[in-house]
Image (cartoon, rainbow, N blue to C red):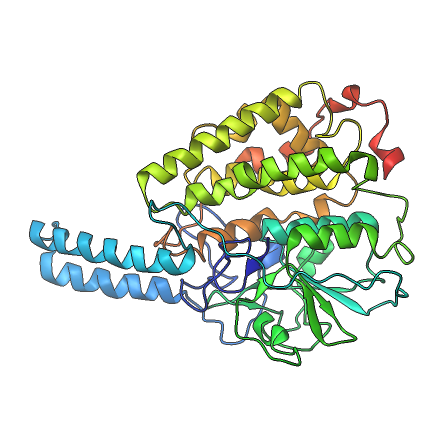
Length: 422
């Protein structure tokens, strides 16, 4: 799956163009105590305002309400009308953000581009370009594989960030010095096509484009075409198709002997966990929500039991299935448990799953792909229908780097050290 440029619905559904809220200026902090990290301050974007438009609208509404009713509550009739209007508006917006079936269950759209490099064709540095975003779990998969394989020279990448209107945008060009100094991936210019928005990069296709602009996206610079924007395909391509130029060609995250097992895990984890959290958060009916929650936690409990005796999903070997699971687990306590109502248990309450999360986080290179402040901003400030006030909560301790770098003890389950694999 992929994430669209027009609503941090992540996965192939993604952002809907210019519809929900606007990220605040890097200079702002909120009443909840969340202060923008140094890595995100001082970044200039075209048209960026000193205050969030949503906050300006809230101030105007407060002034009108105070003039009409003072500090008391508005009349009950008005509350009823407001409830009906908001409910109708919410249904309309959620219909755009997250298409659903008759019972309100989230129905994720399919990725449009599913091409692959020509087998046997010479690998030319820079012939393919990878577009990613650190906020999106689907793009995060591709970024991790790209990093572990050492594909910087073979497949250059550009990093997009959520813009003022929910569109994926490229950096204005001023480097995020603090983020870079911390070893994090930060927003960049469009290093392949020189565009200001991801949608404009999609439109560079010879046939043009009018669909959803999603990440990750693998661009074929030679033919000026979107090769693929399905994350499951892209991580396989990055793992196997560029070994001639990879700095770590010996790392195989999808060995043929484990293919059947990897496929089995992928199928289960995608439906109940990767997409399962979105089926919870984007459910438009109580029955659909409760069914999604039940499926999610049933699978998490099964994974907890499995990981009690197995270091990774397929034993001693880190595979693409682990990376697909990791990017959801990393966001669980900070985003999905709160914003998506996956509230039955926190991830840290699953000792094996939480240790597994820390184990993968501590693999050399993985931490540099993880930017929790950017993730929190991307979800809480952009997904307006789920968080109309745009208030961003503080990062839970279980999701902070000091907690994730604590000893996990899972090496005792493995016969082969991860360092030997990577």
